Amino acid sequence: MGGWQIANPTRGNQNQQHQPNVLLRQLRAADIREVKCFQLDPQGTIVAWQVHGQTRPVFRITFRDNSALVIKAESGGTDRDVNKNLAWGGKLMRQVSPQMKVQLLSQDEVRELRAISPMAFTPRNARAYLTDLLDATQMGIFVWVKMPYLSGLQDADDALKKGGDKAAELYATLSTAQTMRTFGKILAIDLFIGNADRVDPITGRIQNTGNVIFQRLGDGSLSMIGLDFYEASGEFSNLSSTFIHPRWGGLHLLNTNTMDNFAMMVIRGLNQMFEEAKINVDYFTPGHAFQLRIGMEEGVEALREFISRRLRTKTVQQGVLARAVRLNWYNY
Image (cartoon, rainbow, N blue to C red; front, side, top):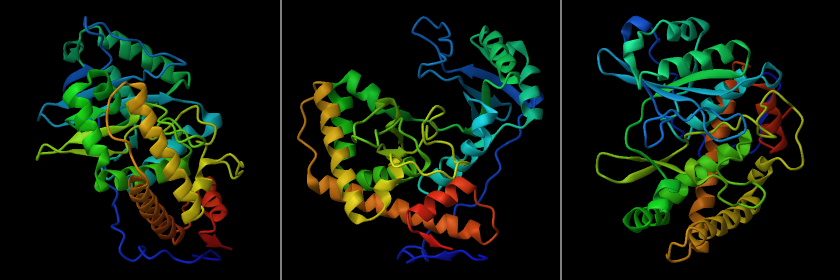
């Protein structure tokens, strides 16, 4: 640990479950059976990436043995150390959402994408689209990541638009103590890494209902996951910077009172989300806020345990360490 000392270790540090690194399958053109573009409109036309929109290039890669990965292009830019931000954001989110095994594509893997057979693409014109994206990648516009393919994904935006049973299931799922605590854990990471594209850290408003994401489990239930944790244009998403701005959302994690206050803001944001969708449901209550705050505390404990473990090998991103110090997790 060198000169770094843990300040007031949290009660969960000894029992946190360590999430080991798991390498995802290497991309090789010869191993790939299908490349499916997810950005299709109802007519099957590709919806092109928007520079200032929310649409981001996403493809499912299916291998010849029927295993699958997802590749996704995020906005690039070496001035923001986007590679490190993505890698560290993924590591931190994985501490509370183990499905988030996000890895950067190597240069060799990006080259392999160009060598995939044209017959492998669905729809066929997805190959030209991917080629354009890879050309843009060479200019630093994109950085590519790979992650496990997760089946059964659903989001709040779709449920609210469909209404009826879908909206009722969304409300019932969000109302459970387990989901509220999971949401709190995810929000703790979002606040720490500067992701404001799920919940607004200033108002607690649900900023992007499409980023409130669930996975359908084998028993039919929905489990919230921390997908889409990186906000490329986020004001506080640069984990290389050691400057801590007074508006940084991570300051909500300072203590129980600040977490309580933010939890209540989020509860109001959830109520507003259903009201704006004109979905009639019971209001979320301070009891829900209590569970959300418990989850935030658990997320903080997971963060502290992970950073403490990394400090022993002195391999912590400077901005990550600066944020932890600002939250009084460590003394020097």
